[in-house]
Length: 123
Image (cartoon, rainbow, N blue to C red; front, side, top):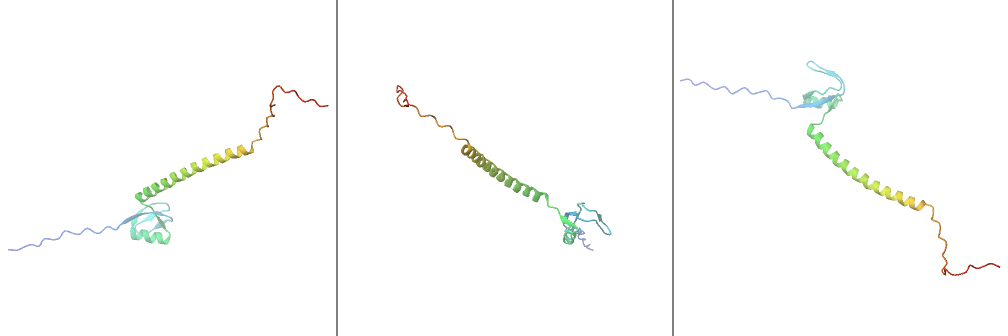
C-alpha cells in the first residue's frame, strides 16, 4: 500500500501594502511612467522613498479627511459664535458713542412758580 503525500496548497505571494501619492514631478522606470499631478497607488516602500526624495507627496485617506473636516467644522462653529458675540458688543459700543456724541438737548426755560405773578418792569 502506497500512501501519497498530499501537497500543501501553494501560498499566494504576499501583496505589498499600497499607498496613494500625488506626483510632484514626472518619473519613469522599467514598468511605470507617472506625470506631475498624477495620483498612482504604489507599494508603501516605494511611496516612502519617493516622498523622501521629493518626487511625491502623501495623500490622506478618506477617513482622515472626514475627521479633519469634522474638527474644522467644530472650530468654525465656535469661531462664528465668537464673531456673533463680538458683533453684539460692537453694536452696543456704537450706540454708546452715538449717545455720547449727540448734541445736547436745549435746556427748557424755567417756568414761573406763580402763574398769576406780574412780570417785573425795569425802571
